[in-house]
Length: 175
Image (tube, rainbow, N blue to C red):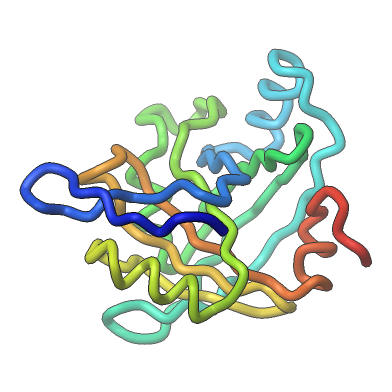
């Protein structure tokens, strides 16, 4: 995947690599309302919708997050919109608009693709940033990192089996 030169940031911090970038993540108070706004204003359509209870491994133990999710692809970039419902959703709720009826999506995170769990774990460890949670299932594993101190937003590392990428709709993935 290219040169793995380590770049130093302020105060000797290691640089965050956005190699493998593929997703823009947003949060909203109203999934359907946000999808309408994105569809009308940005020509995004064909959103897949699903409700999920994510089993999470957090630094303080096992938890669950109930969320509603919509995803759409624009070329090789996935737009993900998350409506937090209940459980361990603090990292999503903190970015929501103050007005409870405002469906405007708020930028929340980017996701980067990694080829293996080992590569993903190594890259996360090298960053020395707080891990919010780890989750996995259906051939997809991810680590959600609080990168706000360096990027101003969260960062999600994702690796998947070929079947997992196909389930996510990855362009060119074989199902």
